[in-house]
Length: 299
Ligand code: GLY
Image (cartoon, rainbow, N blue to C red; front, side):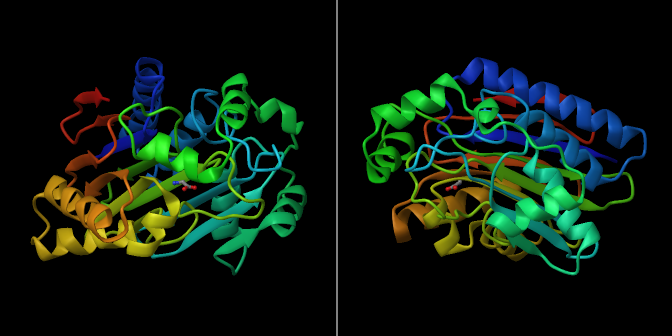
């Protein structure tokens, strides 16, 4: 039994193309799972595909901070060992998710930030890219259209217009029952330099535990961090005896909306191999390949 689900961010507006990008990423990763590759490998491959897609706010396509620069966050979580790796505020590389994996696999740490993360990337031989290569016309337009961070949050997450986009992620279970989750983001346009959102924080932007399931989140990072959305979703599932994954995601997102006024989206794979998604924004591009091998996708 293997399954995977991916998302291209809550508040997606280039929906059809983003949905196609999700389908391709999910199928590529599912093939690896059927060949016996690990959930961690599948999640890394899926998130890399989404980071390489300029329609997504991660890797190539990342939005710009208040100084007009790209600063990216990512995390990967291993549900078998509860180990995880994350990076925050990294620049000049294409695939922060792979750097997060290196932090997990090759250091005794769980998170590296800013200059230290980029130094580690250099040490590991990760190719540097020209910062301009990561920047799209759409990211520049969002930077120029929205004058301040609060209007980005209002427009991207809190209105029906859903201008802008946010974050990518993947959750998978492999043939051995191991679960992994990964999340990667350029953050939110016009964020303060040095601002870190939910995405690289364990239990906030993602989490995985073989005994329950795995989750990746998207949406307003400050809200997600305040309610520990990923862990809350898993704990809610556990309280439901591991069934009704969609209900666990819905209740957790509704709690976030009620308690801190934030909107977002989540995807989940349970220890039984069930996939689920839910979002409180108008749209979220997603795709899954279920344990029966069926491809589904939506907006
Ligand atoms: N959810 C991504 C962020 O707020 O940075």
